[in-house]
Amino acid sequence: MASLSTTSLTFKAPTTRASQVLRKASSIQSISFGRFQSSKSLRLQICCAAKAETVQKVSDIVKEQLALSADTALTAESKFSALGADSLDTVEIVMALEEKFNISVEEADAQNITTIQEAADLIEDLVQKKPAAEAA
Image 1 (cartoon, rainbow, N blue to C red):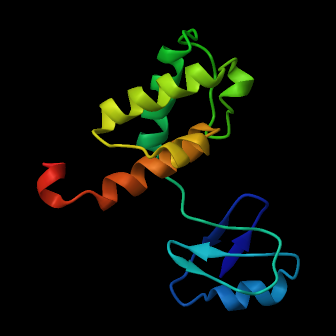
Image 2 (image 1 turned 180 degrees about the vertical axis):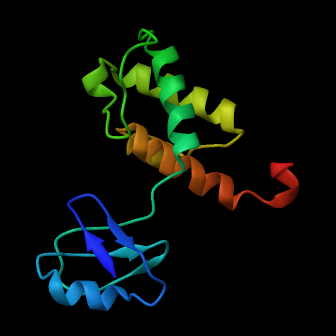
């Protein structure tokens, strides 16, 4: 069976199908699993989130770049702007992430990063796309 909340969709048994959940959740607007997306008229987009380890590394880099104290509580939903980051700070955060994860972030992608979660999701996507030889 699956459960649905405002932030996640959890499948607890391998026999559960998204269509079984969607029949009961009529207010959902869209749903995606990796590269698969439903074309139904829905209200909520559900996608796979980055690993907790990646989110933590991004949080650490954000704290360092913005000179936040070690005890500053950050969540995956923390917005860079709410932490006091301006556009230059965001560029520096992206550069630090590129160096830490050995990736290259396109300018268009960099402009769309506003939260720790968005940064972590993009990093995992870029790391996964790297050729095996380059990743080593």
